Length: 101
Image (tube, rainbow, N blue to C red; front, top):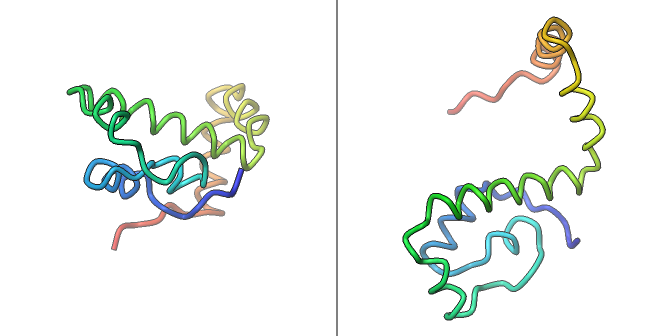
């Protein structure tokens, strides 16, 4: 893998819709830079929301794999409700959620 770039999914997907850039290439550095015209026509079948959801999830999984944090996520998923609440409190204090400017 070439490496994850700090490009928001929404921006990458907007560039795909407007200019045919491959969001996987933009974010992950994988695949072709642009879709071929034939492939681009297949993506414009009126199922935009479904494809966007699938692509968002695929990119999220690739980011998890690239950072090698799958085991950490599995451990978090296995926490009971009270431990998860404690984890969330500690995590939010250590890494406060970013507020939009």
